[in-house]
Length: 290
Image (cartoon, rainbow, N blue to C red; front, top):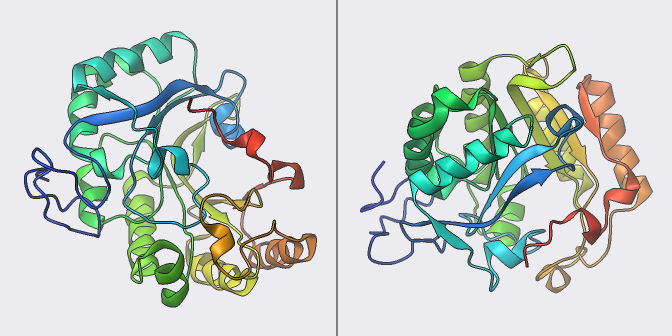
């Protein structure tokens, strides 16, 4: 993977990111909005001490409802870090007692993240989490073999029309499905320590969108063949942020009826995992990046 001719994500824009940003909006310097313990990941990741989150700025998707739009598309561009500087920050997080290192929206910085982990992986002693949009090339997932212990991908949509409209990625599901499959083959089924903290495995997140519950049901139906290899995190935290109001049906929160229908589908299939409470649909669960 070469940032001089970037093909890290499915956009494969070919940008020389040492000269100009790629489609992700990022150049060849890792820019980070927040490095801190975070208590609002899944319970097996946050535990009692928090996940050691690293929120990268920029993103390879174009989600019109982005819950972190301030850093993915907004004015907050983040501070630049070299691999050595970030490696030192990861060790500081470890020393605070976090349960893991949680790279959030990392895809477009994968080569630099690998350089960072080369400097500190042997010293970390805690799992490394890859927390992504799910829009991944299997080649990138394979390159991360030995670097990542826990994969935490979204699978946002099944419909190509919907993913094109809402994320400018008509090919989203084909890439996300193949990526999740590759992740499960790489790290295996979920493994926990004696305190219930995850050490290895895959958690697939799906955030239900208002007016699109049937697409959510299709996502679950297609993930069913992997239900014994993954945990499902079914999310109801959708809040109409960013440009959501410009799109039909996205200008409101999820209804209880919509959530319960998708939850019932997940239960009928037999997924194990996590189901969010209604109170999560608020900006209080979005970190303050200011």
